[in-house]
Length: 275
Image 1: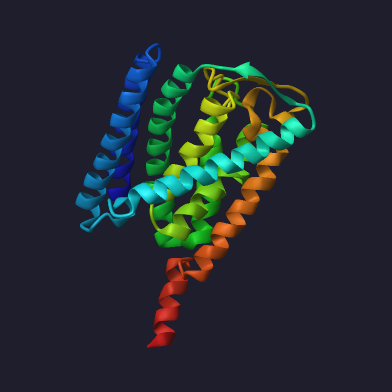
Image 2 (image 1 turned 120 degrees about the vertical axis):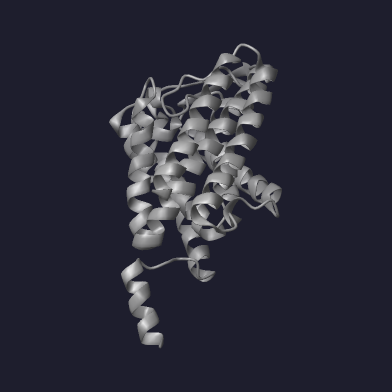
């Protein structure tokens, strides 16, 4: 039941936050403010419900080191998306026509902050973490990545291919970020950096959402396998490649730090042998 209560709390605050931010979409500064408030509120609700249902200190959203972890994640997310766009531009399928709108970028920062925080609390904070307790790291990484990809099928210009790429790229990468750090702050920052770079900087579609213009006035073209089509660069083969590289790096780091876990039955067998 603890998982049910956690899911209900996070989904409820996510819905309220999403509606509030969407209501202010015509005012970029209000969208930024509401997005930040929604992000903070979501973290507090998550910490409260997990602390009450699991009777423990909720260390995965501890304040200590939060700013640094979010900053590192945002930098990684931005650089990875920039690498994807650079390769699409290199083959002539991403073009910049000039400057876009800095106020549009401001509003998108608030919108993406709210979305990134609530999705990470749901998928990595509740689903991945609780599944990992029973099935181990690998047993949690696969199903939560598939669910994360399927989550994006509800977007306006969603496609099965785009959802599949997210399940194979962003899902494992964000899960690996949590495992490597044992904190939700790193995947939150990574998720935000990727989404904001896609919309607020490079002005591309995000997971099938036709976002408003960001800092650049730009457009993509060409085959879906290269540019991602209407789903955005997240459906590009370049995304698969670069996210896989980051995922492997994070999992290597997690293994080196001893943070990969076995499924519950194997942990019990290992403990019995140790005795």
